[in-house]
Image (tube, rainbow, N blue to C red; front, side, top):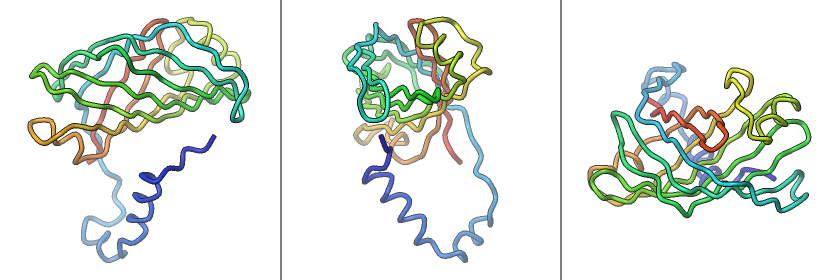
Length: 180
């Protein structure tokens, strides 16, 4: 399964069209900073197994609720979303989760979060079995894209974000950072 889609292609194409002089004018080749914005504790239900498909074992993990908390966003994760996963034999899991957050002010925010979790086959087996595994033993990163109308949460659609994940038995914990 490839993670190339029109949004990713458009972003890559736009970046390729930026002249080198413009990059240098914006600070050269300096790495962008990261600023912590909020965390998401996403409650999940039991996996629905779909079988072998698309280069790995496909399954769907229902999203049943949760919380958003931190300096940039607070609210509740609404039930009804899901995380579609492809678990490959090499210990890599390709993830795409779609769900919504109802912010404390009542605004509903859509999230499409695409990522990768990579672990040794043994650690991957333990995670899939629902065991608690120290997050330093695996790599779990994703790039959330937010969908919300104009207003106080408009900054979510005007910036790029990355998150670091941790898989717990009934919760996926994500720390969301804004790319500077």
